[in-house]
Length: 194
Image (cartoon, rainbow, N blue to C red; front, side, top):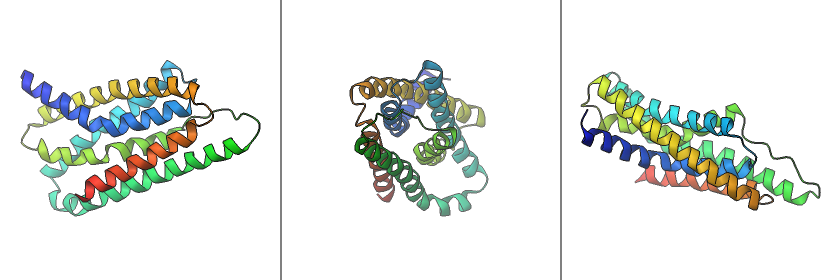
């Protein structure tokens, strides 16, 4: 593969990973004592979905284009619903925590919530499959792997920054994290309407 191919795939990965980066920040805020293993697991989940979605889009273009294109208009609504639900839940938890006198043990997102976040932040990457449809499968797979690798690195950075800020903002972290997730949901929704 050429340098241009790798650079183009990496830049595509940076653009696609920004929503996952923001969610990683929110998760880092929410769980300031997160260890390196947990950070790798969370970043790995987001990277997996960022890898999978463009490849699924590529497969859809080569198999079931009509069915996929009729569903494409629902992608912004799905992302808004998923991130709004998770963000709203975090926001409510944070507000309840602020009202209580005793400090509450910070609990990070469970596997189900992480999978929902992974889908919600990468669902827009399905349409990338349309932009790489002229690639052979091996090239589409490599481009998707590069996108996933870039996402992993960016999300790990987001988690680290969120952790650092989370220890400083511990009483407000869940509220801020919830607001960030809801805002990302609206951003994806508005971008999808354009």
